[in-house]
Structures are given as structure tokens and as C-alpha cells.
Length: 232
Image 1 (cartoon, rainbow, N blue to C red):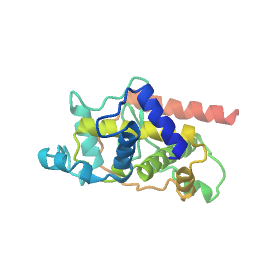
Image 2 (cartoon, rainbow, N blue to C red; image 1 turned 120 degrees about the horizontal axis):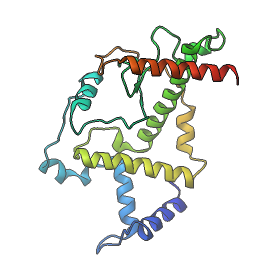
Image 3 (cartoon, rainbow, N blue to C red; image 1 turned 45 degrees about the horizontal axis):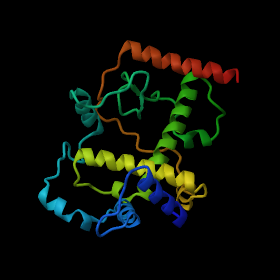
Image 4 (tube, one colour; image 1 turned 90 degrees about the vertical axis):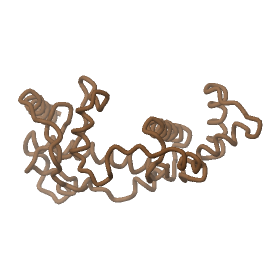
């Protein structure tokens, strides 16, 4: 973050956010410390927290994604898919309501399209191509966030609620940097890294059941997308 962008951020937090100087720290010092924690994940700021609070882990890191998602969906306060929305998933998940997966056995990864063979030949190929492109953008976005904010790259001992606020804060600050610094060197560096959307293609345990209604919606989406593409 440039010096000017930092100064404007401090003004926004003071004038709009209500941040005030304390007895020992100015507003700019408070903001600098907070940014330092986010960027470097300096654990010396949370040593007391680490010793007094027992980490609240629901699943160990080796648990299959499908099991974690199934558990999240089954909880009364768990993951909810907003009406009319859906999550983009790889084919390790079942094509259930609210979760949009690619077609199996059809060209998918972007590097497969780079090898030639022409453009999409049918609705399923076009759907998979656009699914892979969208997934590539998402993966790059997460990669950029984790590159900028070190606190997102390592295990956290904060509560789940605090971790959620940290992620939101990182996203808001990232958007602020993009507005204030159109020529962000970090973003250019991440975008230059090769990424063909060729991530792991592992079949995990299906987390949700496929429904006839959702399958029909999925097929109609692909068909309408292809028809629009043909008449472009």
C-alpha cells in the first residue's frame, strides 16, 4: 500500500469508522499495527490469546471436503445457499441443488482447450469451458488474497467469528487498494503466474444428493448458454 493510500485509509477509519487515538497510540499507529498483523500474521500480538483460548476446530485438515460440506449443510446454523444463487464446485461433488458442477467426461481444464481441436462443439463443452474460466478467476482471486495477507496462509487460533471478520476485512482492504492503486505491483505479479485451471481433479465423497429438478435446471442453463453463443 502506498503512503498516500495509507493516509487516506486512516482518514476514512477516523472520520467514518470512528477510530480514535488512544493514550499510547495514534490512529495511524493503530492502523499500521493491524495491517502488519494481517500481512505478516505476527503471532507475538496474539500470544496471550493463544495461551488463554483453546482453538475451536470442527474438522481436522485431512478431512475430505465432501464430509465437511455434508456436515455444514446438515447443521441448523450451517451453510445456506441463497435463493437463486449457487456455488461453483469441481466434479468431486454431486450436482445437487445450489452446487454447480462441470460435466464429467467432457473437456474441462483450460489447457485442454489450448491444445487445439476448435471451439465448443456442443452445450456441454461450452458449459465446461465457461465453468473452468470462472473457476480460474476464483482461484486467482484467492491466490491474490493469500499472497497479500499472510494471516490467510497459516492456521489461526482466533474464534470462528473473528476469523470470519478477518476474511471480510482482508477483502475490503484488498478492494480499497485496487481503487487507490490501479497499478498494483502485487496484482500484476500474481496475474503473470501461469494458471491453466488445471487443479486437482479428485473424486471426493459426494456431499449432496442429485435431484431431477436441479439436473433439469443445469441442462437448461447449458442449452440456453449454447444457443446464445451460437447466435452471438
